[in-house]
Amino acid sequence: MVRSVRNLLVVEDDQGLQRQLKWSFEDYKVTVVENREQALEHIRSRRFPVVTLDLGLPPDIDGATEGLRALEEMLAIVPETKIIVVSGNDDRANAIQAVASGAYDFYCKPIEIETLQLIIDRAWHLYNLEADYRKAMKSSTTVSLDEIVAASPVMNTVARTIEKVAPSDVTILIKGESGTGKELIAKAIHRLSPRVDGELVAINCAAIPDTLLESELFGYEKGAFTGATKRKIGRIEYAAGGTLFLDEIGDIPQLLQAKLLRFLQERVVQRLGGHEEVPVDVRVVCATHQNLQEKIAEGTFREDLFYRIGEIAIDLPALRERAGDELLLAKFFFERYREQYKSKCRGLSPEAMQAIERHRWPGNVRELESAVKRAVIMSEGRYVSADDLGLQADHDDGQNEPLLSLREAREMAEKSTIVRVLTVLNDNVSRASEVLGVSRPTLYGLMEKYGLK
Image (cartoon, rainbow, N blue to C red):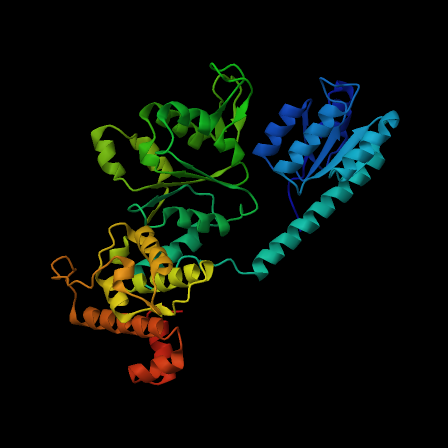
């Protein structure tokens, strides 16, 4: 593959060697740093396929403790990076120890540029071969949205949106009621993105006190405040190369909104008590159950931040708006927890399915999952009953239902019937076609029409 930029990180404290190495590799974009902390900052913010690492780094110039520590910490962040350790002839034992610890190769001083060039080129090509292999493995094993169990048209639209926006780096805002599965959508976006090899770092802005949220996001330097005995890297930096998921973004305090806005605009962070700006390459996905437009009108949420986080918005519907999905989800959760808890239950009873369909599910998918989990654990019969679910097969007066045309009503009833029969018969299409009174090809055609896999 042709790659336009070859990033090479040189970790070397000798200024003479710095200049020599920087100007000796014309085919590479060389970045030079002189200590372990600088090396880690650059590794977190940018991808370096190859690194040359001097083992004698300050403050242990005559030893190898700092260099070996840098090797260990860099490999923990980017294990696929090829690190070539550089040492003196009298330090060959430590160089061999470094290779045993995960370094790609070692080279002893004095440096001969042509020889080192061959080692670096070989490391670069190996890195790319492995990267191409990982990419091929990903493409051969199709990443799907299997965990998003749905058949309703509104959720099919959500799934298509995810597939379209995931490959880009655009910032996404997921909106939906509590329990609708916003974090699941964020995970799907991350899995389908080119950043799947990086971390998905999630932080719930509503679960952390306002006084701690800034340090959690941006980190802090040693001595920034009482108790800050050492530097702490924030969640944003930890997400470098991957995806940062900010859940409940509507709860972020106003004083922090300006700092978050600047990060989103500039993609740099400044730790508490620090003066340096650290560049961070990260994709951002946000989520909220609140109406941010109302919060803007109230003056509690910045309008410019809203437009920055909502470059693409995904509206996640409530479970009551996903006609037919409640039974599919109930079956999915039943099978999951029946296997997990070794239950002898064989399925959901007809009255249980009726209760599931008629319940409004104010807690959405989370409430449904909890109800099914509890029922699998507590049920003493062969089939889960409505009582096991903690539901009653009550009747709805229909006042809250949307007004439909006759065609829409017929299609909804047809789809609901197909979903119910397939659920009861454990997706046995032959038996379902007999019960429904249609041929198998006709049933397959209807399943395709309504998006039922």
